[in-house]
Structure formats: C-alpha cells, structure tokens
Figure 1 (cartoon, rainbow, N blue to C red):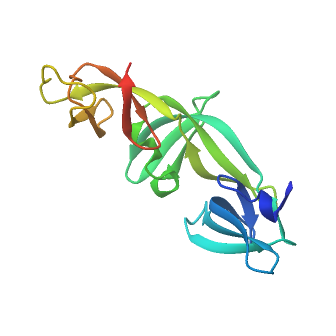
Figure 2 (figure 1 turned 45 degrees about the vertical axis):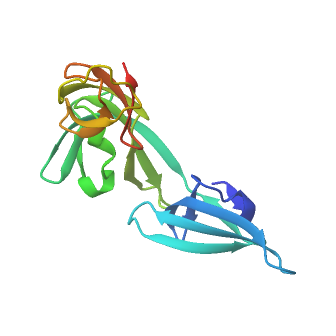
Length: 193
C-alpha cells in the first residue's frame, strides 16, 4: 500500500480512512495566515456512500486503498439484484445488491462487459464495492417522436427511448432505428454512431 502525503490526496484518489475505502471528491490545499498548510477534502465512503469533510494537516499521511478491477459480464437486473457472470467462465454467476451498483448500469445492455471494483481489506478479504462501465456506449433508439425537417443539433431536444428501456434527451434530428453514442457518466447524447 502506498502512503500519500497530505498534498497528494487529490480528486478521484481512493484512500483508506478508518479502515474503509473513500474516494476523494474534492480537495483544496491552502494556508491560513501564519499556520501550516492544510488540505480540506470532501471524501465519500465507497461501501456506505456516506460523505465526510476531513482536513489533513501537513504532517499527516494516509494509505492509498488496495483496489483491483476484474472483468465481468452484466446479465440482467431482477428484484433489486444485478446478476453478473465471470468474463472467462460464464457458469460462474453471482449477484450484487442494486444499491452497490447504483444507476451506473442504466445505459448498459444485457451481456455487456463491465469491470468490478474490488476492495481488499487488511485480512485479504475481497469485497465488490462498485462497477465501472465504459464512458461511452452505443445504443439503438427504439422509440422517438417524428423527425423535424431542418433541425440541427442546436435547435432543441426530444425524449427518446433506447433499446435497453432507458430514456434520454436527444436532438430533434434523430429517429427510431438510429444508433447513437451516450456518455454514461452524464447520461447525455454525444453523437450519431
């Protein structure tokens, strides 16, 4: 485990705080008048989802959390659970609670590959704490209001339904049957595929 100095605790780093993994959401290093520098951070517990504001002094160090990722295939969602299987051995099926995954699989089709984010604690026990999905995915539009002639990307938006059942705002010129790319982090239309 790597040790991080107070000024190395930055956004998107995953640190070990009080024995649990936390993702750094914001960090700001500053000096108050004649005092020593401080890093004021906002961190989110990756297991419980709790957000805390912690200030690290210039003499403090924290461990970077041991995180690994492992490929898996997303199969389907049912009754508050998400079913996946091992990418190499499809007979190895397992489920995760939907609150662990969150809404990250909203734009992912069945039988798509995702990465499991796994935290290894001090006793070398592995715990799946999340899922990482591709930033951009390509989906087909199944339902859309009629195309408006002369519409461009800047004229407005309409709500369209995608092949996996999700709905997004898309430009007026897209139609049912079109394949489009979506940013999974923001849920926004990117471009036609």
